[in-house]
Length: 526
Ligand code: XMP
Image (tube, rainbow, N blue to C red):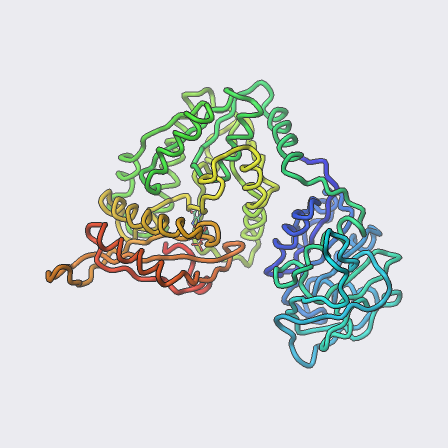
């Protein structure tokens, strides 16, 4: 699938913020793609970038083995914006000098805007915002530039960085020592937008409305007169694929929803209600609860659970797909999104460690042949998928549903998966989500859920001794799910959740709150 948009390419030099840069540029309405700095030139240039952004990164330009600037960037003659390490790399290659800073500069800083009028830092053209003389920014660097490359002038300075921003307006090459992509640089998105539109001349046509038309059209072209099958999980990604594909090819789309018994309270009913009854899609709902539980009898090892659930899901899905038609003539739709593509490329790198084998419900059954795979969301970030979902008229509960792992509650029920354990966990989890939802916390917390532990502890209820299971409340804040901080949930909220769980759910007599960030913990317990 290729989309017809002016594009900015972001080269990733290992910054934890690289995906954010791409998202910010897109939020300004300009399409952007992210590539590892050492991706093959043909691949990167295949996006026909109108400009490049070089991300930050942990290295130092003089360090042996430090990531280098690919030759095609300067050879292309296109504008370049270097951020932090990217700026240092640009300066280094163009004849400037980078040195270790006397002290690291980390955290909020103020930079003073200096130098000539330039399109990058001409801010305030937006309604009501005055043009500033200084900017609040976020710094995070050790090295800094102490001599500019020929042709460059300083555009901003801070106490610790004489060249907090630099530019050459003739060539359209710029550098900023601070991080415009993070929220702590309040005018940062505007700066990135300026680079994309005013410096590179990109059209700002990356909007939900345009996208829906394009994606619907591309599904039509891909599927032709054929049939399409989709594993619908009820999560936002597969739901948006369903809505797009339904718009594109109507009843030639069959959604297969497998009730594994591992979903949250009320979810299976909600999927059927939304897609079958309300949206009138052709939905096959399969009750596979017993089959899935049979596959999990006696299994306690997390990876073993994941593998069995993944395999069983594929078999069930295959069986249902066969009923629709010969798989070789069927197209398979998947809800793969851009971070999956970026992360799976990163995982394929030789230095990557496997922490868990994630699998998606509806994940690609490797051994079944389909005529083709249709992945309409493969270039989109989650927030873009949500915007599409809203524009397509999906209900809020689906558009704003928190991410849920493919293996479902099985990885939140430690030890052996039993029906009784699942029911207990479902009830506790529903109480947490209910209380959080009342406070609007379902949108502000990236993920919140309950985990049931396979141990018992002593309690006292109504003067009697209890010896029952504890439940863990886990709530995290994160932008990308690669790192996460535990959410500072309101204490009164936690008190209500605890009280309700212990009172309302049989078999639970203790509630604990998980205060571990990721790393060192992961978000899920298994
Ligand atoms: P971890 O536990 O690895 O989770 O920190 C990061 C994010 O991934 C989700 N997760 C999964 N998602 N299939 C999925 O589709 C999986 O097997 C899986 N395991 C974890 C987790 O909920 C969190 O959002």
